[in-house]
Every structure is written in C-alpha cells, then in structure tokens.
Image 1 (cartoon, rainbow, N blue to C red):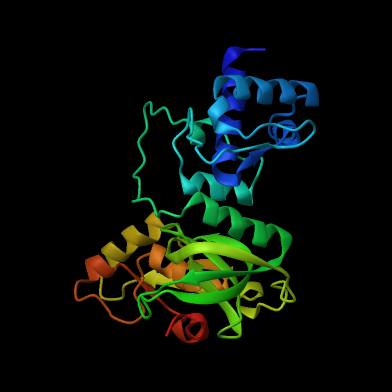
Image 2 (image 1 turned 90 degrees about the horizontal axis):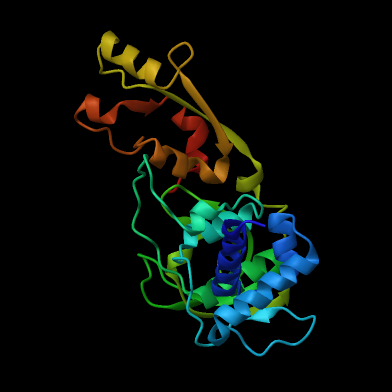
Length: 279
C-alpha cells in the first residue's frame, strides 16, 4: 500500500466526520474498494492521529465526531460534499485536497451552511422524511418556520437548492440552502415523494438564437460558438430548471439589453416556456 493512498482515505474520514458527523468502515469500502479489515485499520489510525476529533468508540459502531471536531487535512467546501451526496463514488482526492497545477478555475463566493444543519437536511432527503426548519428570503427576511419534504439537491451553477414539497404553500418549491437558519428537526416519514412534482418530471426545450439585431457576420460567430444547427441552439431540461438554465446562458426574457452585443442570445420560444418561468 502506498502512503498517498492511505492519506486519501484518512482525508475522506476527515471529510465524513465534518459533514456527516460519523464515519463507517463500509463507506471506505464502497469509496475505495478496500477490504473491511483495511477500512477498520484506517479508522483506527485516524483515531490515533486525531483522538480529540472522536467520541469514545464502541466496537462495531460508527466513529462519531466529537463536539470539538476540527478538520485535520481538508478545507470544508459544501459544493464538494453536496456533489458527493449526488454521486457518492465520484469524489476524488483533488476535491478534498486541492493542488493547483497548470489550470485555474474561477471560484464563486462560498455559500455558508452549518454542517449540523446540512446533515439533517441530507438525512431527510435520503430517508424521505419531513423536516421542520427556519427559512428566510428576500421577500420575507424574517425567520419563518417551514415544514418541507425534500426530494432532490439541485446545483444551478451559482448555488445549491433543495427542491421539495412545502406544506405552507402546498406546492413543490426550490429552497436556497444558504437561507436556512437555526437547527432542522426530522418529523417522520413523508407522504410526498416527488413523484407528483410536475415541474420536475416535465421536460421543455429552450430554443436559443442569436440576437436578431446583430448583423449576419456577428450572428455567424455565435452560431459557431454554440454549434447551432440551422441558426438554433436547442437545450432540453426539466421545466423546473428552465429559469436557471436561462440565467446561466445570460438570456434575459423580461428586458432586452440595449446593446445587442451584450444580449447575444434570445429565447425564440418564450410562449412555450413562459408557464415554467418565475413570475
């Protein structure tokens, strides 16, 4: 066994303890394809390296993070954790322990969500439970209790949302993770599973075209940029995500920019998509 391989596993234990509050040998087995015996050895070694990070261990039980837990060898990043929740076997060591070399990516400002809060929300998602938690918004900045049944984590490219049933509004909605406040409380099994979330299960096609105010040569540049067919770029997505995709493509359907070079793209089939856009 190479030392770097074990360092990756110890770093993953650190990652699990911070975000989930516990680490189990079966998680190491699933993530790295190692034996159960090796997983136990890694957990035991972590306990020796950072004893203050763990509660006293009971045989055959998960290792639990202590109240004074501090990450040993990784920098918490909620994007990395939520991406792992979506695709548990896709996490690679570079996400936990970045080492920039010849390429650089722009980093967006992090959206802070306390680990203890996110643990409960993810638990509600995984176990299909109702959860009560305070929430704020720009239209209602005062904390307000909400009872939700989450069914999917959504990364819009700019921030993470939790999509689920809202008992207050009696409809499926998106909730920005960084706008949850306080502690979340699990309320037991939910009736809504997301199977009747029409906006989630309906697909729409966005037809994007170059701004018609551009001259033919400028339009040809955009057609090449986006590999358009017959002057159109067709993007399929869930209806509930149409607004976010338009925002990512910088297409404003409400106000036309006075400068066509800034606008660049238009939504050609607005009437088809409009029912699914935010009012």
